[in-house]
Image (cartoon, rainbow, N blue to C red):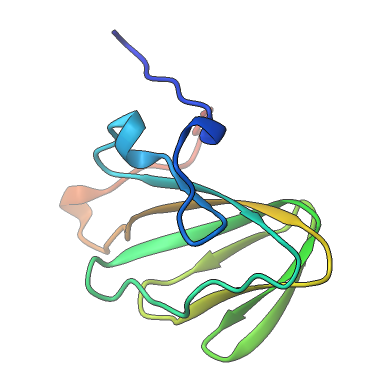
Length: 123
């Protein structure tokens, strides 16, 4: 099979919001999570220093605040936020439901031998 498909609603929810899709999709280098956040929901503050994963949070519905190293970043539908591995991050949801797609992967280093060419990416 050349692809794998899963509906996030078929994946057990963790921490009252998170649907981790990497295991059912059997990904090898990228993490994908859908977070459907109830009003007032907060994620646990964390970083990815140990696994050196950078993350991108894309808010696809609603509005929320993401705390990055204690700095509140206000997000609205359509906003994308890049977070480096060592930064502490926490989603703080407001008074209405919101939904995020969270993507994580190992950081692309400065080593030219492992260059990952992104220009012209049509994906």
